[in-house]
Amino acid sequence: MREPTFLILTALAAGPRHGYGVIKDVAELSDGRTSLLAGTLYTALDRLTAEGLVELDREERVGGRLRRYYRLTAAGHAALSERAEQLRRAAHVARARLRANPVPGMP
Image 1 (cartoon, helix red, strand yellow):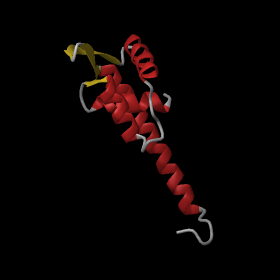
Image 2 (cartoon, one colour):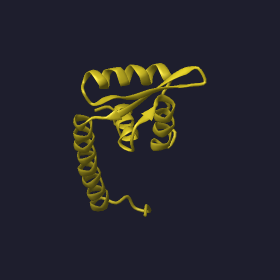
Image 3 (tube, one colour):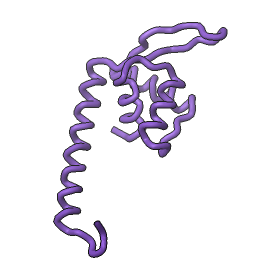
């Protein structure tokens, strides 16, 4: 799973979000490293919907524009949970190796 997908699923794990809400959450979650354009986000949401990881929650009109809210599916929850566990294990190994081989002068 690529990082933008991980971040989109993580944003949706907090509950249904519309596109702009997902874009804001992804920027926050990544400390500004990942900024999604609307076209990129909706292409990803279409793909994730086709894969069964997210689904349309609802639509509403705001200021004459249609706002779509997406939510995580059970399969999306499972995929995100699995990836989060993989990252946790990898981070654990990285920390252990760093502790085992410290660089002189580094804390």
